Image (cartoon, rainbow, N blue to C red):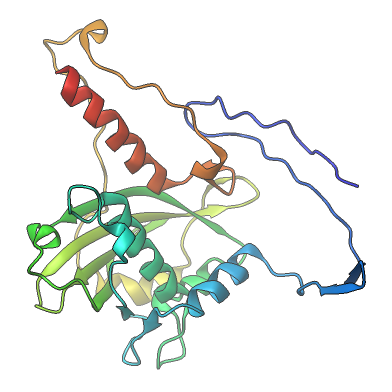
Length: 268
């Protein structure tokens, strides 16, 4: 039997506010025409995600600590190259995201994950408030080998309710291919509002900051000499695959912007 909890609303232009849950109560072992299927033990989504990541060939460098993490990445897969012969923007975005997740969930030689975010998230959730991606020209040069990649994470900025992480992806030549800054807010799951970072955590990581200010992306406004009717626009609907924990995933907005950019350039 299955139960539909809420109707889905994929028409919301920002993010779907509802989800559905299908409950399928099954015994540990099922018999289908004399074929036995053993179900796995229950896992949280986060546990399963990290188990899958650690089963790949991403690895945390043994020298990594909670202050400075280094992930060894095998490199861009062939499918990351687009029809123009360049690494696609989204492939670079996802590369940085996966490496950051590994660093934040794998213990270094000091026995702690990067910035101890695994402990920080106990009883809390995090929200990606802003992201900045700086892609350098070496990412598009065929002469530059794209494997293996060295991904380093450092403490960006520590505030009252949020902190930032700086991720640098370096090619074998030593050239930095991509620098990412992620501003992350700690959220109380009950109130769904920002909550203060622990004092001892702020005191420990505050002195390690490499940035003096948090990442704040200013709101963009149309040019003064433009009218709304004259501006090109691209309408889209948020799909379920664009979401994460009932919110539009922050990486989806990058794809939305790119999908809107190219039609706008053609229209002029």
